[in-house]
Length: 366
Image (tube, rainbow, N blue to C red):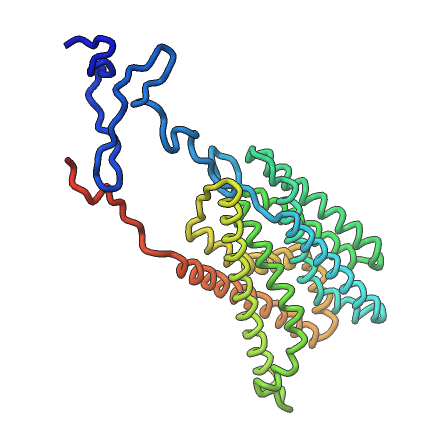
């Protein structure tokens, strides 16, 4: 039977007949049998669903087509980190200038160096995120991130040299802080920008908590049995340090998880679709604060070796103190790393439900 206009077979083609889509109750949806006029798309071939509006757009934080991620809230992270770096530089300067020049100033400089380096590391990363957030090309983004970190490092070094006393100690602090800012900027050039943003927020949260926790060290030492003997004081100090590390890691893990969750929901509200990160991203974000603390220790022992050796050479007691402080910083970084990673994974795992089963896969083929 020929396909004459107006006949029931007018819309038929020489291709095999396609089965129409089915509704939820299994009924087949009938397609129009009216032949399309020239230049029009037949109703049976008209795009529907996602095809009608094109492919779904990935969220801002999804790497699509080789494009790096978008980290929301970068400006807030940058402002927080810059404020924290300024506070650390100011407090270190006040502590050094409040003492007589010489032995005490060197000891305080060595003691304050880790806080300044961590703040410079985080500030370099957050400022690089802010500067490169809209860049699409991965290579250009990385180069811009390193350049931003270099700029932050130069500004920090100049600020230290202008406000601190002009001596070898000041130059060591300035040079090490500049190197840390450059490393932080390079870290922000990674494709997983949301993870970098979560790491910086977690690190800032942990560092602020440590400063606040210092106000309750003495009451906790008494609670943990610090007495008149030196051994009891050392044992109590060890338990206080472990408590601080445990709580800092817990807060860092929660901060990392909340940032990643908020960034996904923000993308859903803005674009209507979001591709959530998998568990390795949450693992790295939760462990990120501890990783940055350990990276800080590496930077200090390379760039600030001269200052640490000078402080340790002051006396035998100073040598013992510097060794103990270095060991304590490494232990703290490890505790924050594992506790933060475990916290993030546990919280993330509790949000996972059963895997949805596709009904179409369960129905036998017709």
